Amino acid sequence: GVCSNAISPEDARVVSIDHGCGAHSEALIKAE
Image (cartoon, rainbow, N blue to C red; front, side, top):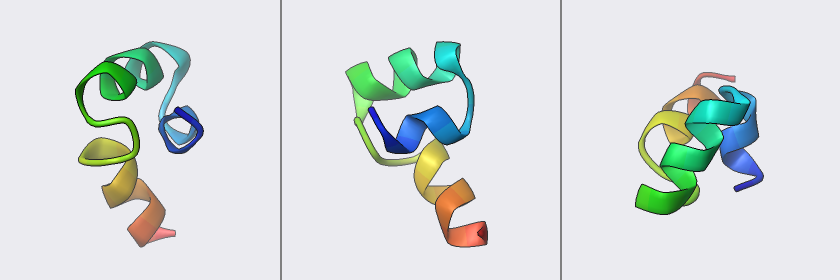
């Protein structure tokens, strides 16, 4: 997903399948 892109292409795919815009990406976005 779009949010996942903040991490990396690989993580983006994993996060997309699992939560889309949650967990990892959410933590990074909140930090910013």
